[in-house]
Length: 143
Image (spheres, helix red, strand yellow):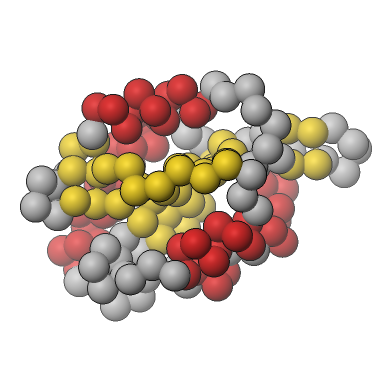
């Protein structure tokens, strides 16, 4: 099984993103560059809500790049009034991907999670599932 490497500039960007000081929602969207067998930066977004992120992912042509990785810094308001900024790793592998793509993607996902030291890892199979309610429910397990 091939495990993709990560673009070195992307690794640096993700590590800096992990310690960002801003208090808005932000996202880094990554994709797989098939020819180079490399995970690369696709786009960065500042002040993006979960619904806007969903729309951004939904508009993609998944026939060109069906597998997507997202690191999302989310402003989370706890029930007791505290505010935190969890870093969420959201990965999308749509139904219908080839099995070899799924295996390569799974191994690469694990490497990315370890490299950037992410702990809140969530999978979506359909971009429509990415809502603020879904994200808050997932984050509720990390109180």
